[in-house]
Image 1 (cartoon, helix red, strand yellow):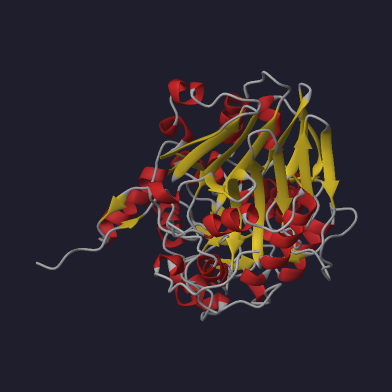
Image 2: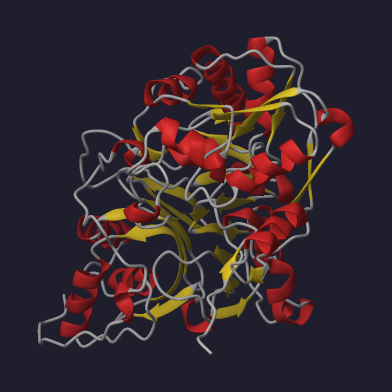
Length: 489
């Protein structure tokens, strides 16, 4: 009998961010690993495959990684074996390299003059070319991740100062990267010149904390100071924090607009604004662009709840809690049978017939990627008694994959890549369908941003901030590389 294909139903139709990073520097004698551990908890939504922490005590650099959620990956005895006042942490969702233990981060590299551990959020699109350069220098790569390439490149970079090392790294890399780096006595944060992925700085009990999102600072009791600027390197030692400006000039920043739509927690500050309020603004603009006669507005929990509130406030339609989310559903691998798919969706969402019965519903979601889950949610609402279901999406149609740290399907698998809005409406079974326009999403974000900043919206427009291959495999670095002889810098 032929083998049956299985897939993950519970989060099959959502984009996945690459990962979350933290960095902690405390006064001598501080326990940085435990602070990093709690910071990672706040970033669990950014990656659920593996986690790790590296620490330095002034003499030795130690590293521990494991598969699974933060709560599964670490025991107290693991943290006890990571002493020191410097630590970085990482939680991973793979966008380059398979999901296995050898690819878990942080990754340690020992160069001629420095040993470091590095954690990475993003995607380096020229990693294969750079790995060939490293192997030409006689530096083998044992993982299939772009992160290892970045770590080796930084450890072997020419120069004796962090300004020289980071300048070499930034000039070599193409793509998206927010990095936390630890040595035995120093913490470093680096953000790519486009500023695609977020990274912020907080003050904590005489020390410092770096994190992908400000919510991680809140959870450990750190005071948010600012975001790391695009192309900036920050170096933290016992002498304090030093800022090294970008060594390259860019025409514009290209912050990932999907961070505002979906990835970041609503209590995080991105580009100077609270994400929750940005999403409320998206919902309000969605109501302006796509009004409809209805009785209730509901959001698909939890990512679209704020946008649904904004739609309700702008339209004057009452907001209601129509779907209850099972918060303890993980990825459930099931057979691709229609009836079982519907059970999988119902295991994630349960409708409230007493609220929905006989009502015309505006259903707000953050995005539609493949469209594998949306038809089942619409059907779920109809079976619960909804008279009409009007779908509203607070992002434009996704027509192109992301190559900068978001795990999205190939273009051919994206529902909107070759379908009109009307064809999508028929496919999902809604009475009407409205997407927020590209102008609307930029307006919603920039309305609350001062000064106005640039964003990457390539998944909606196909206009990438740097040239990329049209199709790139996340397993590209699994292939062996033929070594060529060169001289290391």
